Amino acid sequence: MRAVRGATQLEVDDRDHMLERVTEMVTEVMDANGWVVDDFISIIFTATTDLVSEFPAYAARMLGFSDVPLICTRELEVEGSMPRVVRMMAHVETDLPRADITHVYLHGAAALRRDLARVRAVPDTPPVGEPGEEAHE
Image (tube, rainbow, N blue to C red; front, side, top):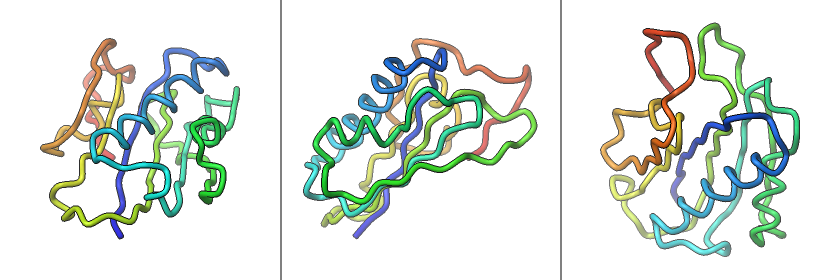
């Protein structure tokens, strides 16, 4: 069993946009690691407090995660942290060594984990946050 992380930043708090970005994040995690829905044990989603349009887990349900335990919770409100971010931590049955797990950080959230060597980023927009802010996850 291994854990994998992912994060994505939304442009706006809109239900369709939320579902699109979370679907993209979950699909990228699956594709990058060669996993299917049956490999997943559980997924924890967090969302920043400025996201209220939909439960992130609903996007996973729409992808076929019907019998995988999913839960949504709030991210800590830390001053200066990146807004409109959905994060995930999934537990997966896999033979991949920990070093070979690909964690997926998309859009502005790509700046959250620059330290990971195997980050897949879609930097179509710059990270949104305070000028000069250091991103840590």
